Length: 75
Image 1 (cartoon, rainbow, N blue to C red):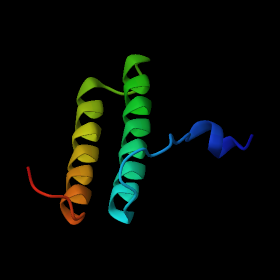
Image 2 (image 1 turned 180 degrees about the vertical axis):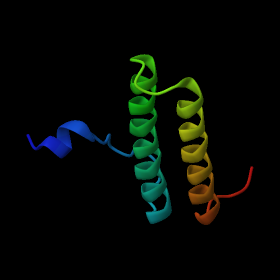
Image 3 (image 1 turned 135 degrees about the vertical axis):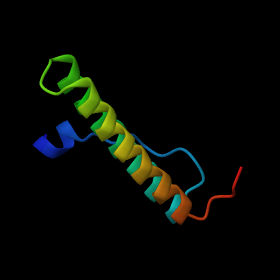
């Protein structure tokens, strides 16, 4: 198994297979992996709570921008 496949595992997409949905799903999984790393770093004391919060907030804003660029119906 390659290192990247081990570290950055992606689950299968089960929704409607449109390019926008598949792309957003990939970005959502990437977001999840990054949140896990940030949480682990904060829990182990490598970064502060404030730093972790700011990084997560920035990632969330990026994810919201990606969602707005996609052709999803507004709820």
